[in-house]
Image (cartoon, rainbow, N blue to C red; front, side, top):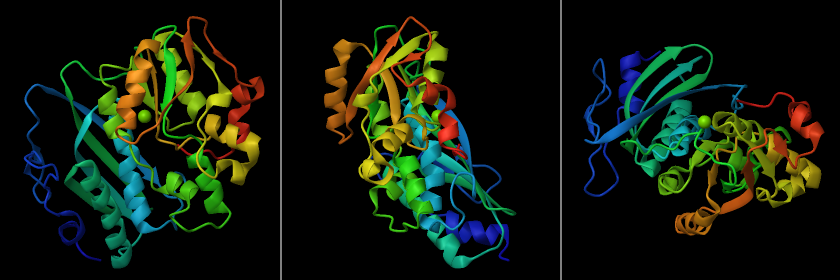
Length: 322
Ligand SMILES: [Mg+2]
């Protein structure tokens, strides 16, 4: 086995350069010393989050290595998007049963490609031997005092989601049915989710509250409602469904996947109805659809959803991830 130092040097010590013209990576000391040294933008606050992805819990162990690298970073970055943060840096710890050069090269390719796409610098890493798991800590910057949070919603706010829902669950079902083409829209939604970073930044100052949908719309909406001491009324017929979802799961299954499936990594927000058109236009310029799906209200609980689904959503989807 290569030493940890050799592994990091070979696969993870790439130049930590920003892809934004005129910007700097802010990495004073990258991989290779005892710590990374980072230079935050003066006046900004740091948003920090960590996510661990376990083989056979969060992703199939035999998924393509590039997808595993991409996905481990994407799910961590999605939390920065939910706060309206600009992604800056990440550090990554990987545990591997064995060193397989082709696998590691693929993993690093997927990880670095998303770093470049999101303008994130990999500032440090750690490699150990063990069951396959990847833990990614991300650091983002927010202008002081402007972070989006779960708790700022108000009764009467429009509830809206970015993109489409159900693809995470639909993609898992497609994988289990033997689909292996990563250009399949459902499989891509599941294995190659794109964190809504640009949308999150654009929603600062417009949205009252925000959360990313990792556990399923109903569960994450419940988090928003609890944080704000509110309830919600959902328009289930308005839910934007992922491409190919109805064809794979049928009408009812598609709607259940959109409500309870999880792993969608879209943003769920609330905002004043007077701001909705502005927000939708702003996101359309980023090629991100924004769909109104209901309202926040004073009365606790979630109305508009079949009670069976509300209370037994996970029975429909045993073994749901996250
Ligand atoms: Mg989250």
